[in-house]
Length: 138
Length: 202
Image (cartoon, rainbow over all chains, first blue to last red; front, side):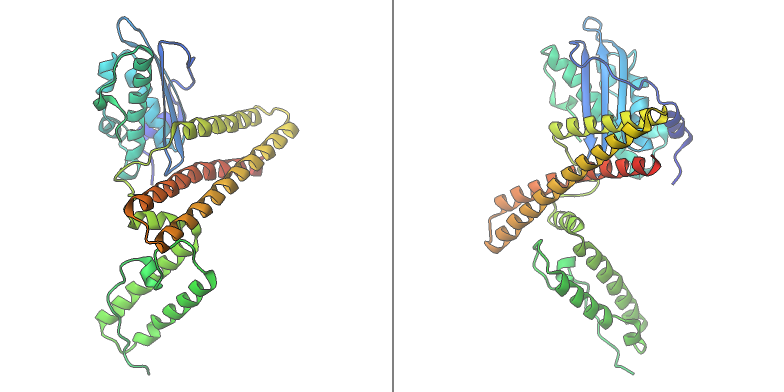
């Protein structure tokens, strides 16, 4: 099966690959995985505690092209958004943008989970309660 | 000419195909013998005079028999299959969760693989590189052997629980452990394959 042009584009030119200091109180880290296919995805965000705007986002993913493209897109999308706006991103938005086939939908779920996990980690550092709806639920 | 053979309805699951209980220890010789015997019974030659319906059913059973044999022959596929029919590992329905410690470990192992890959791409001292790759290969290979040993042990626990007619709760607990082993195994298997690929190209 062929990947869509957008997946190939993100795969060849992944945005925001790298990492942020994990111990920084303004950095939230989300590490998620899909054991079935052996994918691991790390997504990190630097969040301004006053404005709650995501100022920086980095990722590193070990997995297939779709998983890399999904996390690359996720970092692009969350940058400049507020925490609440970023939490509103749904895996279906990623599926649509990247034209993922049904067998690769779990990659987009992983990216959504990674966003939630990263923000959850940041909230935990700031003693903000994380409602159940914002926990990686899949 | 043989008389048209009769084919009954498809058995409920792969264990039933071979008349086996839902246990994880299987005697390989007996399985193979049974497979050959059943295959022979379903051979198209036996269905020359059968109705089209019978022929189709025998073909279907034959392909099911092959799937059943392939699945039960492989100890890992066997565990996956058992959990699937017990409703403990539904593909697509619920994503498998991995414990955070495992993710951390796998991420770090992948990162060290990545470093080796990058150093190789940059043409850094290839001799030391090969050694490091071999060390990684040994390390991942050991981890795979460990998880396989854990799996065998838990498989024994499962068989004992079946024999003892253990209650649902303890069966579920054993299946959860089997599921964890499978998840861990699939990560480590990937690492083993990746390092083998790098060594091939080194």
